[in-house]
Length: 238
Image 1: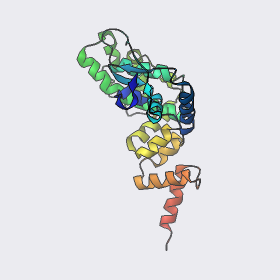
Image 2 (image 1 turned 45 degrees about the vertical axis):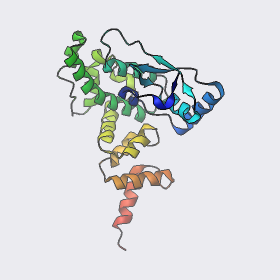
Image 3 (image 1 turned 135 degrees about the vertical axis):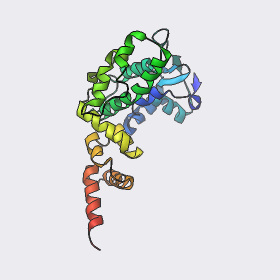
Image 4 (image 1 turned 45 degrees about the horizontal axis):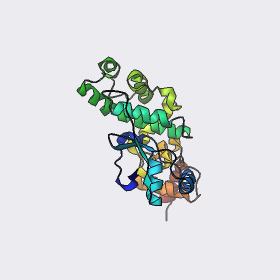
């Protein structure tokens, strides 16, 4: 067991969103009563699975049980770690289509540097042909998922594993690349849909925050409607 405050996090652990407040409260109550039944997973001393358990243990002031992942043999790299993390979580977590699209977009983003690193290391030469030339992805419609699909052999995860359409994943990429961090967080937590967030992702960040506040207060059902309402109010003469 380790102190929850002293665990470094591997980037692959951030591919999956944190639990919603409601889910986390349930986990917290369960750990308080029964302890942590499943150790968190580490690779080379860094957390790859169990962010929510670490957060709960930190709040409860208790040590968290850890287990070192053995990897997939000699030459295990970041790509293998990311694949393992997603295989563990995609079917375990109850994610909305929007959340799954965000995971797919983050994974596609993660693939490029990880694949480049793998090529430089000369690891798993047999899979390099499927990565080479495609690591930078594509900006065409369905490009993000297509780039995951094209690297399927290297990543062992295909587009269908995410349960998100190509179009929704492209919207998620727009949100990740342009939106305010709090709007991204709202989509990842399942509070705002990815198509709703995409509509205002390129608007001024102050407008995004104001729209998010309107939705939180129940003054609008979507951030798109909230942003429209704010713009109309601003355009009205004094």
